[in-house]
Amino acid sequence: MDTHNTSELRREDSRHHLHPFTDTKELNEKGCRIITKADGIYIYDADGHKILDAMAGLWCVNIGYGRQELVDAAAGQMQELPYYNNFFKTAHPPAIKLAKKLTELAPDHINHVFFTGSGSESNDTVVRMVRRYWQLQGKPEKTVIIGRQNGYHGSTVAGASLGGMAPMHQQGGPMLPDIEHIAQPYWFGEGREMDPQEFGLLAASSLEKKIQQLGVERVAAFIAEPVQGAGGVIIPPASYWPEIQRICDQHGILLIADEVICGFGRLGRWFGSQHFDIKPDLMPIAKGLSSGYLPIGGVLVGDRVADLLIDEGGEFYHGFTYSGHPSCAAVALRNIELLEQERVLEHVRDIAAPYFARRWAELASHPLVGEARSLGLLGALELVADKVTLSRFEPGIGGLCRDICFETGIVMRSVGETMVVSPPLVITEEEIDQLISLARASLDATARRLGIAL
Ligand code: PMP
Image (cartoon, rainbow, N blue to C red; front, top):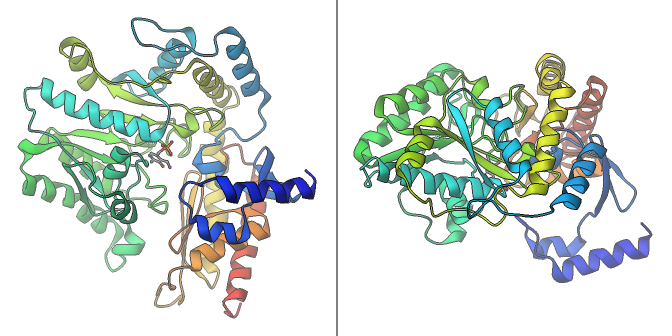
């Protein structure tokens, strides 16, 4: 792309485009980076830089960029039937085939899917379904859904309400009623003085306390991400999930695992809940379902909920124009076929994740890093001002490091003073070496910028 064109585009962007999760005034001072193409694990900007995308877009390009098979799947379906809906007693082959495929991949007790256009819509659907379920059970007063502080479930009103992102709540005015939040299992941030497994049990016990405080007759469900993504790749101690499952079972409340990030291979299994061996009643999905090539999401619905909705629910007054969109569904189906044919989950489990874990852990020796943790192909680095006391930096250093990463040639995301990565699942060992070198170079440059000796 010629420079004239690029600066013109940048100007038009600042004039007309309101970016998601962005301080527009600050952005417009410099203008945005314009991404023009991508291939494998790399993106390219209009100024000619090649950048290793260690975030797979927004945690979604699991199969990597540039897959012609997905282009062909979209083009073929668009020629055949670009759009039709699944309302009013109709359906089409891509939605039916994708529903069958997804329920084959899901645990045995999950045999239905409700399609949506995104992760946020999936979580809106979760709220509607959970409340309808308890109505049909004859317990309409069970309306409270418990989420977690610093959890992320999307940016629609229901998604933001379920999530525990304080700044979103503050800007959004009153959130949905009857949503409560409990502590997160963030050992480095909130429990370092304790043994991790004890801390995991303590964090899980806040669910039981909350249920007791509200009265179980009011509580409908608990929702959580198997590993919190947007909150900073918070990997719960091994003791956490079994205890959460026990509490949900004991009190009969629905368990919802938000699989929008962990689904489709991120932890080396189809779903993160399989990694943690939990049995959710509902699993919202999106992102890796189509590797981000086209927007599609859904909710995988366990038999406990589906059977009641179907047998006794009558019409469910819920759905979206693009629920099960044929072109998106065709791409999702092809994406899943590719993940299977190329044994991408096995690659994650047996090769990429173990190698990544070993190399990522080496970054813990860096003067800026207080902890380097990973699970599957998710990684986080805790930036600290003092490696001995592990005291944190002033806010802003994470953002500085993220900007330096871009300059260095790698996309890492900052969540406060935590740097996170979630690379495409097809990443090779050689590319992991590159990722680590670029991450280290970015940390070095950040330290130099801060005047910290290396
Ligand atoms: N749930 C989780 C766990 C997510 O990470 C996200 C997106 N980052 C969402 C829901 C919302 O998905 P979307 O942005 O597609 O609406």
